[in-house]
Image 1: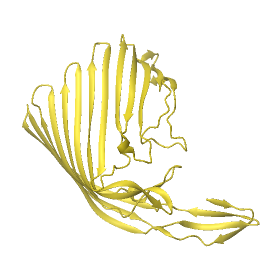
Image 2: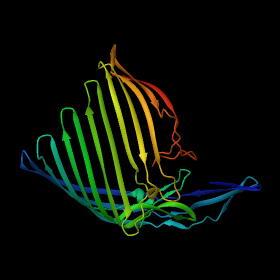
Image 3: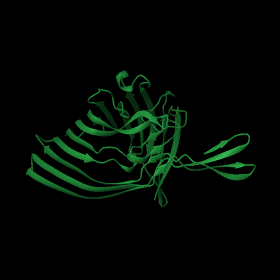
Image 4: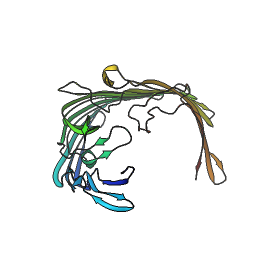
Length: 339
């Protein structure tokens, strides 16, 4: 970093994160028990890990100097310690049991129950990411995360119809997440532990072969996540989201599709300081089957994304400077060469 004045230039060398490394060694065991080949199957698994994390000391500034009339002069640096040198030896584990049941032909139910004890990753402990938004800052004092997890899935498989759905519930202790706070006097997202957290949600997929040339598919997913004590919504949770798509095949040589990609976030979820994410994006396109030309195969794809040229913000998208909006209408044509 450089600070220039009329008389001189001060150069500051900073190190926002320490040098750190993580060593992980573990063992995994799994067992499958076929109770009844026609109806019941049970799978169990257990994983144990030994994790060693080490880091050196990180100071706010490594050095500071300035040039006065072209001569370099050392200036006392700010040696405030950001991260103390340290080494941690920790254990982590995860265990699960899956019970699969087929009550009838084409129907399948799976109940999964799991328990896990997870230590913070090296990124969660020591990260410092600044992409022109609020910085993401790690925390070396994070407690291990413990949790109880459950999932119930159902699948229906027919000749022209596929349907899958999952419903899950999880309760976590000392959840590792991020919350708004101050770091060195500036607003930042800081890694922290939430004492108790509840996750509820589900998703489904449907694929329907309407005819030999026309098929329909749709998908939707939703997650509800709160701090179980304060009842506040947890950050960085995806909104209710889904896709609806129609696909048409022209004599097995070319296919065309039309789709709607939608997202809906309630006023309660987004918070007072953020705008709720709600949009429906319409897209259309085509693709050809690979055509052999000499020793290569060529396939063409093309289409229009965001046909209505809607201005919208994608939830949890990467930042692009100060522009948070996604690109507008996009017309594209691509050629894929296959050897």
